Image 1 (cartoon, rainbow, N blue to C red):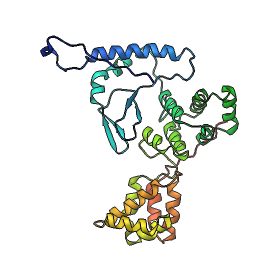
Image 2: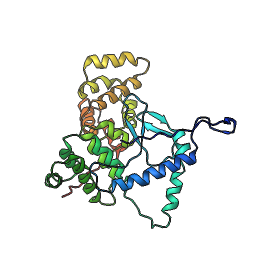
Image 3: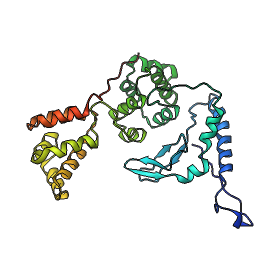
Image 4: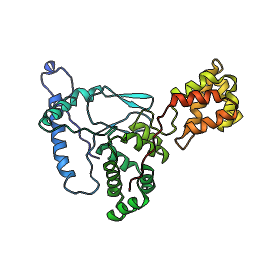
Length: 304
């Protein structure tokens, strides 16, 4: 990772400076342009394991990095919180406009839904461990294709993973929401935090959002404890939730459902919830839940 710091020289007449001890936006943009131009040349030189991606270090307890493609937001989402980045936008923000100006002469290219760009591929490749071949299968690639990529790169994982993902991206049809497919595979592979960082919405097959859980909580009533048992929670866990949320049964139910979802390794919450609701005789809620959920499930095709 390459990190650079831009500082202002000591000024004899500081009363003329509007932003004390801060470099000017013009200088920051020139430095960013210079670095990106030179590093792109370096990336294209064939050097192994080199990718160009902008990051801003997060200040939360997880100490992860946020991908930044455009300086067009004052706050970046971080789980249920937000990271304030107004200063970055002020210093680097209009590079977006300059990039647009440079590309005006080029024909417009329509990207697929939820396009997975090279920055996302670089991030996933960096995070992925030795199980990357199984992850390729979760994406929809055949085992034979994954092994072919592995053989071509002769076990150079840092090159094989992005090559595999590029092949996957390039062979999806234009109607596929690429980011949803990727994040569904990441969740199924155990990379829940990374999936949440890349995509904040409902990502597909059987995933129940907080809104779905609230629909259940509003209708469940006194059947909530039997439902909790059928979902696999212990009597002690349910008793503790009841004590913590004694002022509102609906809040207690919502806490139970969200806590249950958090402990699930796979993504198909809807199927498990439907079975549990039938087990306590609440087919009415099951029917409303499935109607509310609609036809959002995604079934990916196999890529040879």
